[in-house]
Image 1 (cartoon, rainbow, N blue to C red):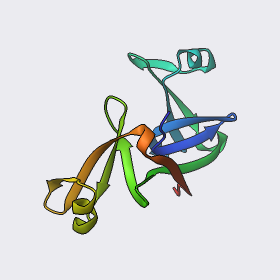
Image 2: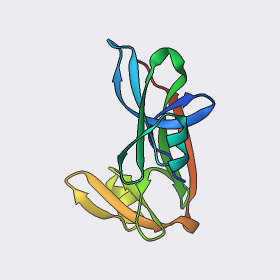
Image 3: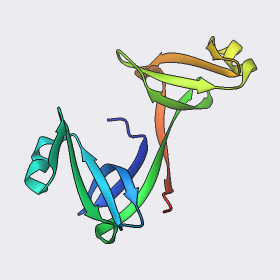
Image 4: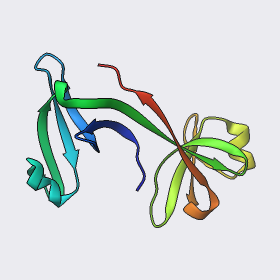
Length: 128
């Protein structure tokens, strides 16, 4: 499973989160595990479960940045499609060297098979 975005540690388990409301001292946890219905989560949409909890019950808030090493260089990455991962760069020289496609004025992207990259994360505290 590829992790990227805002996460919490709650009751020893990791969950994505949305709707952080420091004024109400609450946060909404998001899960894709049906078993979490037994832990007080409610069905929000197909295979999406949510639960609002107090910020006091959160053990840790953090942000996960997804990166890959590809042909000796590091790139930020996103979920791809059909067994690939999406790499991005704003460096035109690297993009040309590694055959990236220009996707915006200063943005280049390339879908790469998972087996061609080393995936790693950078984790930083999420400050309220």
